[in-house]
Amino acid sequence: MTRNEPDPQSHDHVPASGPAHGHGHSHGHGHGPAAPVSRHLRKVIAAVLIPFALAVGVGLIALWPGGAPAHKPSGVGFDQETQTARVVRLVKVDCADVNAQQQQQMQQQQQPTGPSGAQQAQSCEQATIEVTSGKDTGHRFKTVVTPDASRRYTEGQDVVVAYAPKAPRDLQYSVTDVDRSFPMWVLAAVFALAVVVVGRLRGVLALVALAASFAVLTLFILPAILQGSNPLLVAVVGGSAIMLIALYLCHGLTARTSVAVLGTLASLLLIGVLGSLFIGWGQLTGNTDDQTGLVHSLYPNIEIRGLLLAGIIIGSLGVLDDVTVTQTAAVWELRDADPTATRRRIYGAAMRIGRDHIASVVNTLVLAYAGAALPLMLLFSIARSSVGTVATSEVVAEEIVRTLVGSIGLVASVPLTTLLAVLVVSADRTRTGGRTAESGRATGPGPGQPGSRRGGRGRRRKR
Image (cartoon, rainbow, N blue to C red):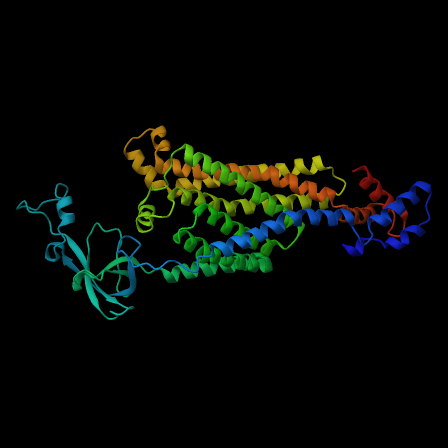
């Protein structure tokens, strides 16, 4: 930008008439080293963001948990010791021979009978599992897969087994899941490759920011909540740290990024207020599934309702970053495309972009919840419950509040961020002057002529 700015010392020697000379004097001071307007803008932004960043740093230090609390697995649900294992043998057996009678009894009325009236024999699979990690490496046990089981095994397949130390020796290990580490790593590699190929350096920075966000989540947010810290406070501090790291790392330490940070921060504040209001008003407990109940039973000091609100804030953060960055970028590009545009014109054009973004993102949020809750919705459909009954049940109302509160914050972030960005680009006289001079050279007199400077200066004085 500096190469487009004329030397302020040469402006006093431009031959021009009286009015033009007056403009030349003003323009020379406007582009002096002090750059008062742009510097003031930076000071205003810094005056807001630096204390905020310091407060986030202090919060991280004060709430830092130093690791998750020591805990002995209870053996219930996810809270159990697991090891890796492998299916070494798989044979077909008669279900009656391996005492797998439950499925036969459940389907007794539906099973066809032979000429003698006896039910047809059911064929099961007996898998021999070998433990491949832990102190019992090499230990083998057998498990039966009934015909109605949703998961099937193959020889050589890796699985995950749970260990119950208090159970009899033959029953200490049981298969709980398949080992899908390899396909997950392949998918992650494909994702990273796609991001880097399309995004190049910006994509690499995005992956670094993603790793940093994951580190904040696993090293700070989760352990701090388990240590008994207020979940809402932990989510605000941790979410703010994620926001600052991700935005500034991906988009640079610029005024445009700072505007996006301010817009995101204001929207998160609105989400927090609305979430707290409607969680209390709707009498939502947050204890609506087995996982939450297990966490509450293992750590009774955790405030489950605060955990729900913390989840709303963290879940909204990623979408808010997307919208606020897009809106600030739109405002900057519109200003670059037409440096003479008024604030009202830029705001209107940017809001048209924002409305399209809102329509698509809000629909995405609703459909994402509907897809995740499809089995639950099927259960309500089977029970022939009314829409009102389904929507006001706590398990669904919790997700409705989560989705709608996040969507309200998302919608509010568009006009708010757009307004902040328009005010910043319109007040940045130094930047506008350079762009205007460049535009004047392209359409008016040459770079050494005063006419182009008069056009840029006249427009700036009108603002």
